[in-house]
Length: 305
Image 1 (cartoon, rainbow, N blue to C red):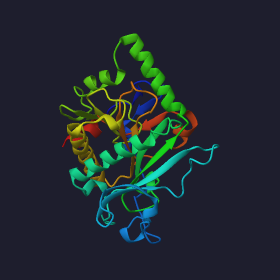
Image 2 (cartoon, helix red, strand yellow; image 1 turned 60 degrees about the horizontal axis):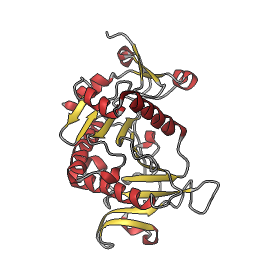
Image 3 (cartoon, helix red, strand yellow; image 1 turned 135 degrees about the horizontal axis):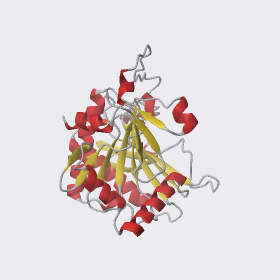
Image 4 (cartoon, rainbow, N blue to C red; image 1 turned 120 degrees about the vertical axis):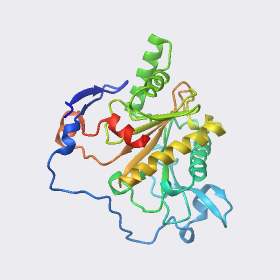
């Protein structure tokens, strides 16, 4: 049995205890990803309010994807005390489909719509932070079954994001290189590699906080999703679909989100996928130390199969 190992995040002062042996500990509780439809679906075609549509793929009568104003937004453009904007992206008109079983081309369309909405929202000079994210499954906070993503835009830069940017800038000052460019070069040669081609690389991070956590980077040093070219969009969609299929086979809820800050043009854009199989309990909440019983090397091997 492998011994536990304490690992530090690449930049942030976060620590994870990788404990492969704990995966075999006795359990008499089984949690399941269960979602039950309680009311009519607001994202099915017959219930869409087109007055709230901000963008679409396809025609109004035959749309494939929509972005809508979030009518239950936590931040709004008319509230200076909580300034920002929120949108919902309905990923398909088909209520029975999930992102993993949509064609690669449709996943690419979703990434392009993220880019289009990021560009549009960023025209507001008060906005500094735009988060494109997806909650899949009840354990990940999804409140509606129909496949959808969200966009959250705020004038506030979250402290952890700001800290990561400052640490990356400090690394670059000392080493004359982008830390994430260095991380990519290292990880695609490690047992944590999932996928790599000329355009993107995916791997399980060294200090993974979640079971089967995965990161996807562009190989080019780009600061946000609007800068991707056609081949990068296609490669990104290919590896994202591969990972989503694997997570579906494990029946795992997950969150994924893009890392991009409007005011920083020298960051390295990437996407984090964090499955919600494990539950943070007393140690995580009390100490800030995270225990992960699935080693990232094991997770990467599963993704590579």
